[in-house]
Structures are given as structure tokens and as C-alpha cells.
Length: 584
Image (cartoon, helix red, strand yellow):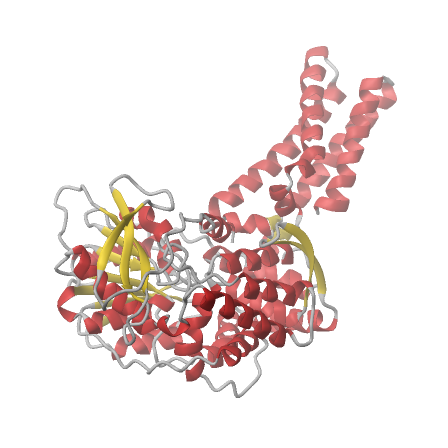
């Protein structure tokens, strides 16, 4: 989750605004150099691909952002890897450095989706983002209508800027990928898509067979899947595989009866707001949170706490909702979904995921024409990878879709969720090996578990919201820091002056703090997300060790009353109140 927040923050860099769209005489393709809008590794250049906004009706020219990292490795291969993020509406450029390390002997090309953050025009839709945030901060029984109204305002604003939403479809995005290869002059390259962009890359491979050497599909979303109709089942199946469905259903029922009130940050206004989360809200949030391998690892204690009536873990989950909304260009997201995805779904049964109903309402308001369903396939070698606990593109649907491709193989990775390559080193190793030799047999990994954090049982973690609160407001740890300082002074002064009670009190206090810090850092080293949920269960004992230190301090005070001993005793007592009444 913390990794996801950092990625979302990285996506908030705003590139210089190019000039307004200019009329294009025809469907010509050209490149335009530009400054890189995010930090890039040395040897990277950025620019725009100039293409028609609609290839069926040429008129306006739009700009598709891209970056090229030139490999300087000995034995550099001539065919690069071209990558696009999913979404729709997620950015790609910020992963250029990461991918250049994954494929060091090849050029890496990262390409934005048309309408994305580093393309132009940028199809942001803050009106809709705010409406979706209002869904949890200002509960409205007719939230879908509110979202539809926000979407109408967003569309009107975009159209005033010359945007024709009918030009933002999977087919057009795939055509941009094909056009970019020709414009950059590469004879062939290796396509790499994740989640939504796997559809783009399959279409691009089908349209450009001579220019496609191989295809990597991570978290494959096949055209045959009705994602909205499957959304609830996908979440339920993931929770069942984790052994958590019954407990989670109990938590949802509890929150439906008595919604939780959680303080979170509105990322659009930058202010704290109170969110009211019912069971449907938490189900929606969990479906997104389980993308992350770190969240999967702590899912058992997280769900157990929610089922038991503990709402502390909801704060980091609620914060992630806002970060997720601002990490996508929602105008682009909805344009693609309304034309390519929504028409393939029946919506026969209501979903407990509120985003399903909201997005249908948006598409009903926009009334965009359905895109022609794609039947594209490719004869190029394909590697499809999936995470066992992926709640969005489950292996239940991606495996048979991979088997239906003429020359594809499938790999499933345990203890992993969505976008496998971001969290599983073994997957990255196997994907890089496939690109090196697409016809070679699958091998093993240097680290078979891929560096994935181990899953924790409910009893392994003491659930508390204090560490997450401290990470956002470090001053909240002041009682701990003061107690540690007093304990060290007691230890040193008691040892130097031969006062055993003071020395042992300081030793016990310092040990309690040291063990706590060691536990926290040990947990972070294995899974930084876990700290947002709690600390190892052993920390409870450290509180009693601190209580022993305070008892020794009081005994020392009883023998000789001084202002220093009284101050140490008062500090210790205050720490125990902080520890037992707030921290735990």
C-alpha cells in the first residue's frame, strides 16, 4: 500500500502544457521532441507521437507521450521492449528506469495512452473524482446520479477544449503503438502490457505481426471477459482462496449495520475529511487493495480485525482510495470503459462494489457508441503471467485465455496479486528470460519466492493504527522518544553512581524501546505495508517490560525522593498511558 501511495504521488508531476490541438491535413504520423516530465535514467529521451484524434475522421492532431531509454550494455539487442501501463488511464513514463533494469541489454520504450497524464490533451476529470470521493465523505443514496452529473460537466469541459471522446478507444490506443514503432524506426520489438493494456498489446501484435517479436502479458484481461459482471465473484473467489471469505462477509455485514467513520485526506483539496464507510465501500476498497502483494500478506490480521469490530486499518485503506483516484486520468478511463467494456456486460445482478454502479451511470450519461468488439489474436510467442490472488484479472479467466492463443505459455505466481512484475522478482526474472529466448523452455528463479513477503496469520500481528498515524504525524511518537531518553539517562547515571534500581530501571526501559524499534524495522524489512496494519504480536510483552521499568523507578523514588526520580517516574507513567490507552 505504501508503495502504491508513492507511485501515485510520482504521478502527480504535471508536464509543461503544449499548445492547443492544431488541424491535421491527414492521418500522417510524426514525432516531436519534448522534455521528460519525470526523473529518467541517463540516456533517455522523451517526446510526443503526433496522430489523428480519430483515424476514421481525421481532423485534430493529438500528442501521445513516450520515452526511449537507449541501452549501453555490451551486446545490446536490436529489438527493444515497449511497455504501456494499464488502467485505462494509468501513466507509464515513471517506470522507465525500473524497466531498464529489468531489460538492461535492450532499449526500453515506455508509451503513454492517448489522453493520459503525459500525453495531450490530458483527459483528467476532477469533477468525477470529487463525486466519487463525496460518495464516502458525503453519503448520498443517489450517488450514481451525482456521478452522472459530474461526468456530464467533465465532458462538456473537455469538448470545449476540442476533445472528441469517441477517439479514445482500445483500437485507437493500439494503433498508436503500431505507429510509434514505425516512427521510431525499429524493425521489430517486444510488446509488454499489464492489466488493461494487455488488450492493447494483443491488438497491436495482431495489427503489426511483422513488427512483433514477442509479447508479455501481465495480469491478462482478455476481450472475452465481462469484467463488471465478474467483479463481485472475482473478489469473493480471492477471499475464499485466502481463507477469509466468511470473516470478510461478517465485517461487511457489521459495517452495513453500523458504518465506520474514518478520518482521511481529500487529495483534490488537500484537507482532512471524515469518511463514512459501509460494507459496500469496504468491499470496493478491498478489491483494489488486494492488488498489492503487501496487503495480501497481512490480509488475515486485517480482515480478522475488521470482523472483530476494529476499524483502525480502515484509515490507510481510505487514504489509498484518494491516491488511486488521482493516479488515473478519469476522463480517459471512462471513455475507454464506456466504449469497450460496459457494452459487453449485462449488469443483471446488483454489485456490492459501488464503483460498478457509478461507472455504469457515467456511461449512461455519456451515451458513447459501443466500439466494435475485437477478435484479434497473435501468432507471436506470448508469455502470460498471473498472480494467484489477483482480484481483478484472476487466473480463472487469464489461464484459459492464454491457452487459446496459438503460441502462448502461462505462469502463475503464488502469494502475488495484480501487476505481478512490480512485486515478484521471480516473475521479472522469468519475463526477462522469455524475451531473451521466447522459444526456450521455462527455467527456475534465483529466488523462487520472488522476494514476496510471507503471509501472516491473524495471531502474528497486533492490529493498531498507531504506527500508521505516527508515519503521517511523527510528533505523536514524542512520549516514546522521551521515555527512551529518560531510560538511557537512568541506565548511565545509575551505573556510574552504583544505584542498582535506577540502572536496572533504565536497562528495562531501554530494552523495551529497543525491542519495539527492532520489531518495527524487522517488519518493514519484510513488508512495509504491514506497518499500516499493526506490529508483531510480541510488542504486547514489551509494554509489560516498560511497566517493569516504571515499577523499578517508583521503587527507587521511594528510597530517595528527588526531583529527577520524580520526573523519571512521571515520564514512565505518561508513557504507559500512551502505550496501553492509545498505541495498543
